[in-house]
Image (tube, rainbow, N blue to C red; front, top):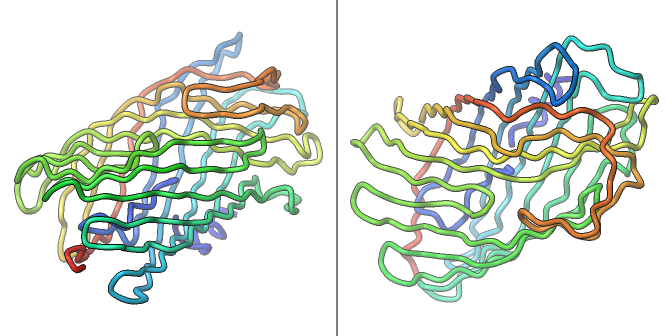
Amino acid sequence: MRSFAFLMLLLLVSAPSVGQETLDVLTLSGRYGFPQSYDSIYKSKANEYGAMAALVAPVKINEKSIWYNSLNYFYFHVGNNEDTPPEIINPIDVHGIILRTGLYQKFSKDRAVQIFIAPRLMTDFKNINSDHFQMGALFLYEKKFREGLKMGFGLMYNQEFFGPNLVPLVNVDWQISERWSVTGMFPIYGKVLYKVNERLSAGLSHFGLITSYRLGDTEYEGDYMERKSIDEALFARYKLFGNIYLEGRFGYALGRSYAQYEADQKVDLIIPLVSFGDNRTQKNISFHDGLIASVRFVYNVPIDNNKK
């Protein structure tokens, strides 16, 4: 099944904003979570690892219009040595495939909008049916305030298995100085970057997002897994050759959880850090936050955003 996922080609919840001066066209990464104990009498520790891939393919329509496409895949695994009841998923193996497609439209050199739809397959790849699909959308208004500072404001919506998830967005592309910059679509992802030299950059990275996955095994068919994690890390990115980069990250996963719920356990609305009407009962046991590490290979190309 893992090989099938990689053949589906290559995935953030991690597509970069179209407006940036460079574009990560292809990203392949692996993630490792250092073993952590559970919030229970479990004696063993949780072992987490995962993989992610992203393929971005913009199609230029004219000087002011780009049809943006990204295909994303990610995989998460959590295992332990515990014997759990059959209605509890153990080990956890969940996959996400997201297609993000839509229009990036410039009105002038200083203003643009992004309008995307984002169908998702979020699943454990068992007994897949229409209940394993989700639909999402994103809208962003972008403005160049001055040379070196471009910002966007908008919303991302996704119909998760627990209910509606609405995320206000602030997109930042800020070249503070020749060496310092801040980029990202907050609160989902972002970087504070210091350019050491032409080949090496380093800094702080952030990634935080809620995702949900339908479970199809007959023992708990219809249940869903809700994954939360806010990853704060130090990173270093090195240009190997051409447009190929190697990036390493080491940090800490905050508020991390893999929570299993029955299908009828819903919330009215979730926005970052706040949920409304959440009276759900979690079926499984959570484990502690902890250290994480990841390695990624990136194919990055420069893009020209200076045309009117």
